Amino acid sequence: MGEYDLIVVGSGPAGRRGAIQAAKLGKNVLVVEKGKRVGGVSVHTGTIPSKTLRETALNLSGWRERGFYGRSYRVKQDITAGDLRRRLLITLDHEVEVLEHQFARNHVQHIRAHARFVDAHTLEIEKDDGEKSLVTGKAILLAIGTRPHRPDHIPFDGKLVHDSDDILEIEHLPRSLTVIGAGVIGVEYATIFSALDIPVTLVEPRDEILGFIDKEIVEDFIYEMRDRNMKILLGHKAEAVACDPATRRCQVTLSNGRVIQSEMVLYTAGRTGAVDTLNIEAAGLKADSRGRLEVDPETFQTEVPNIYAAGDVVGFPSLASTSMEQGRIAARYAVGAPASEPPNYFPYGIYAVPEISTCGLTEEEVNQRGIPYECGVGRFRETSRGHIMGLNTGLLKMIFSTKSRRLLGVHIIGEGATELIHIGQAVLNLKGTVDYFVENTFNYPTLAEAYKIAGLDAWNRMGEKPLTTEHSDE
Ligand SMILES: Cc1cc2nc3c(=O)[nH]c(=O)nc-3n(C[C@H](O)[C@H](O)[C@H](O)COP(=O)(O)OP(=O)(O)OC[C@H]3O[C@@H](n4cnc5c(N)ncnc54)[C@H](O)[C@@H]3O)c2cc1C
Picture (cartoon, helix red, strand yellow):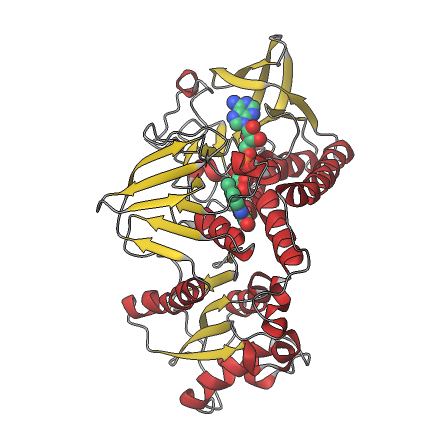
């Protein structure tokens, strides 16, 4: 029976970062991963595959050049599923190789096996060939992630009706697609397929999409999607899906009786924590109805003192970026090396087409808190870089407190949003003001100049800073 300072279950972003952190602190660490290769959902079915698919779709379709050459412009005329998959496989190989090297360099042991609790310190691990053994850990970090929610009324078949895992394995691109569920994963895939000129219908039972994003940005996003003929049907649930494999036709029936026809259906409404085969009861743990584990938000300790959990299995924000940080913090506490408190604001990136990124408070949140504020907007088409790139769309919005002049939130839609956001994030977390954007020089020509334009836009209405500005905390 192997004995370890820390056993990490799962090798996704939370698990791998946690394992390496503990190893760097000199601890004896084992990672148990049931998947064929290390990397988790992030590398094999989530973040990296969807972002590689997006990049390939934008490159081969010539999407980024269409502002100049028109909507019919294409780099490759007949884009196939094979074209998309080829780049995906190469990218995934690189990711796995880097990860395995990180484990080796840091002396993290990893084993391909399924883990199941025997008690709070002991796990039974079972390899694919059925061989079983026991391992014990002074501490255990659960970084087991989630898997797609697959309700019984949806006839998933991996051919015409897909979830976000098996959509990556399609052999032919569909002639038309219905996406059920307009959460982050749904809008990303819907807009990626639409960028390949595939007619897409996006169905969402709620009356709005992306409710946690600033409304002005969401309105712009919906406008752009509709402008390229995507159908967005809000407020009605998909009640039934029926497909005929012979004719390759699917029908999605909505709660208002409307029937949507398409060749393929992608169901992206929700994910479930992967707790069901872990026998968590034996360790004294319990999960909620969506398979999520409750943890202390600062230390990521569960109700069982030696067991920690991090990443998607603990719920929002369920990002690879935040999972890594949670894994690192959880591992530190698990091996008795407390971590410093994380900064207030982290960025949220949505790699739709166009991409969206946001950090800090939305205008709706600022209103709810009763903070007096001013907004500044910079459009990409006002920047010289935007002209060079042929951009007609894209905007950056900043919200400032008129009392302290401090930046409260940054919201971006358009090319490079997920990179540009980090300038705003730094100013936010360092408690900077509108004057930072007015007084500093930005590289020219860049899209980052939109920060300057938005800063000046707000500054024009806010006026000069008083000679001594008090920066109160809000
Ligand atoms: C389509 C899609 C797109 C996404 N895009 C982005 C994005 O652009 N940016 C971003 O930041 N995030 C994105 N995410 C979210 C991101 O992938 C997740 O937040 C991240 O993977 C969560 O990491 P994790 O460490 O919690 O677990 P996961 O990556 O889910 O890994 C968990 C691992 O645990 C293993 N495991 C589970 N149970 C056991 C067991 N009993 N024994 C052994 N091993 C076990 C699993 O096999 C798996 O490998 C996306 C997700 C999806 C689905």
